[in-house]
Length: 109
Image (cartoon, rainbow, N blue to C red; front, side, top):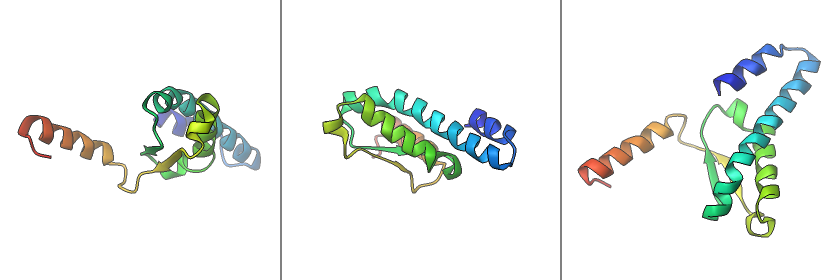
């Protein structure tokens, strides 16, 4: 995310920059979709939850990611695929890591 944020900031605030910003976010979404497609296909996932800054991940990036995943997997099996933002905030990764430690080391679930 830091690299994407830096690239978006370098575009400035003009009207032309808004179009460039959207295209940059779409390209990031396509790349995310390329990475997610084999995982979604192999595990037959119906939902993928993203965590990060909503202003980056929601909108053009999310739309492009969903479209790319659907195009790169068996569409009839993944037409209902949902990519959504987590409702738990950006610290969800830390929470997940804590659960893994508690479960693995202490047997707490």
